[in-house]
Length: 149
Figure (spheres, rainbow, N blue to C red):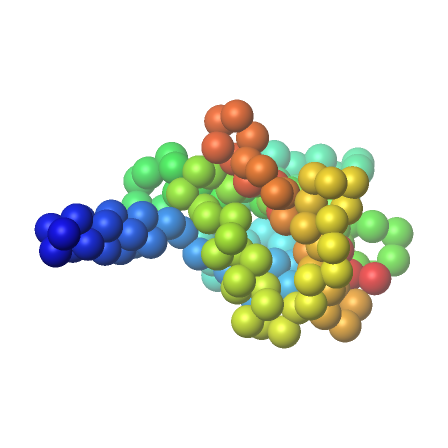
């Protein structure tokens, strides 16, 4: 019995150690950054690589792989909207845990407000809205959408 409990604890700790944390503050800041300063902010300050740039549609896509493991990859598409805020579409590889993202949002003061189209959990704080996909895709990716009202 003691060996089973020890094994369960080790597996739990290993799973937690492998899972990656999402930088909520980075995402909050990206909603209010000027589109002209995005490259400097994402590449120089946070170490992301620019994957795609569509200046006509005011969209830029950045990616980063942590610890040379593709399962620790985050891809952030920043879409400039007509007002003063940006909209984010974030794809997270399979080492990002959906429940940990939800817990992290709640610990940062976000309130769970329900399901959006039965696919995304919605979290709100002030004028910020996070939508977190309930179920990762077949290839393990989790989708997070961020907007500021």
